[in-house]
Image 1 (cartoon, one colour):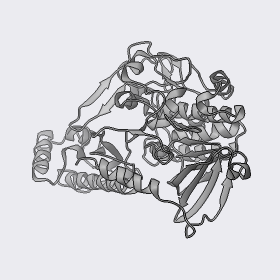
Image 2 (cartoon, rainbow, N blue to C red; image 1 turned 180 degrees about the vertical axis):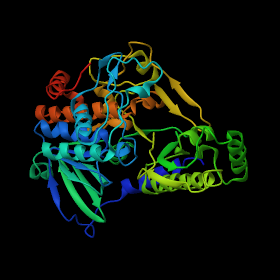
Image 3 (cartoon, rainbow, N blue to C red; image 1 turned 120 degrees about the vertical axis):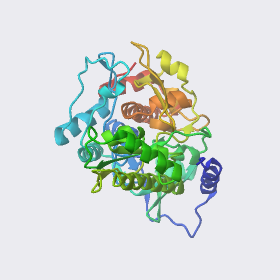
Length: 453
């Protein structure tokens, strides 16, 4: 299935053009310094950093809990915080990980481990419930005002010399959001887009980048098959699987790691053209993910020993690897990433191979040379042509290949904290994020435990 990019753009364009009128009166108005949209790993760290720096901060989230793909998507195994026997990401994200381990268990990898091409050995398996709850507690203790089940509907700049700016303490933005059908209004000095798909930036007038192709998503689940993989006739399994694919009863990608891999570890299905950009594409992605799981369950029940197979667990949503990226003042390229380039305004490290998933069990994976650690400059967090707006997490300024390495949780946490610090310093210095004193941003990050290039 091809991704409906034209339909997505039309929907986003239509929503961006809607205007609040007399029949659409917000039920309440809030004032703050910083609004963060999206409570994934980047959004939580951005909001907590801004709040700890003394900014009145509101964090809005369309779902029901913090963590994004890490919790709702079931990917509660963040990484990578270490590279080449050295910790490169710490701060608020690391505090989150340690707190989740303390409450729900988990094991930290050996920091002296050099994983080579087995980068997943630096991922940390956590209890998803503890991960979510402790992330929420971090926000509450910092004074972040959490608002779940809420999405941005309209964003407009507030002129500096306008009556609205005077009435709302120097606000630069007015955002109308929808909370379960009710319109709400927020005035703030700086916005941070942690949506993962650039939704907020688009509404604010920023340009988005994307390709016609997109990586498959993954629905994470586990099936209790009752099958002993060492005793079953694997050739029979392969023959039946191929027949089911040929007849249309299964899709080949339903077994993400191939049918033999699935029998040995009955988890995960790829979902082609996974897209979380709009409510409709998100609905379609989740439906197709759950249908893939049901197809695999029913297939397993046709195999000897698998007649009583059951679903043991399933993530709430299909995890999406990529959608739109925000066009920023700087676009991190794959060459920048693999060279470990460091800029004067680099605020955070990242560490993961270029990791572009494709259907057919082939991944474009390019491991970093020994000693190479990529960095992220502030300019890659500032949308081009839009003031008083920052972006962090998966949709930061990067090309597709670089983004496939930058999208992982530890890096999202680091860029989120960097964006929160940049927003706080911009407000303190009374300048736009593009004009902020970068050394003061770095000092603030270090003060709050971050590791700065």
